[in-house]
Amino acid sequence: MTKPPLLRESIQPRLDGIMKDLETLRTLAERGASEFERKEETFALAQHHLRLALEGVFHIASHILSRLNGGRAREYRELAVKLGEHDIVPRDFAETVLVKMAGYRNRLTHLYAAITPSELHAILTNRLLDIEQFLGYVKNVVEHPQQFGLTIE
Image (tube, rainbow, N blue to C red; front, side):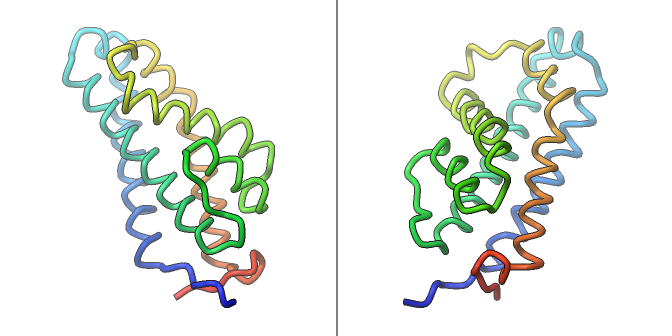
């Protein structure tokens, strides 16, 4: 059975969107932790853009894995682990960084009221490079799909 190709039209807009979200998040992080405490709109905007970026990460993950035998997953954490199992990303990155991203995406979506301004600011200050690293792995798949047993249109 032939695997369906990766679709640039599905991946590229999300890559672009994640990059825009990261740019916004960096700008918000520069405002400092005290502004996250004082201004609800800054905090809310940061939550929104981080959630969008993480949704994009896992949408791309789902798209790639859906083209691989045994790649389908039902939960975000499972998507993260399977990316490592299929060598789309290094296993260690999948099992530590991406699994944490999956958990935080769920927290942003379902437990958003428990997120503190200082916690969110710390993530924006210290963890955005994790998302960039993921984007680098995706760009490698898009540029060299044959190395992963894939094709792209």
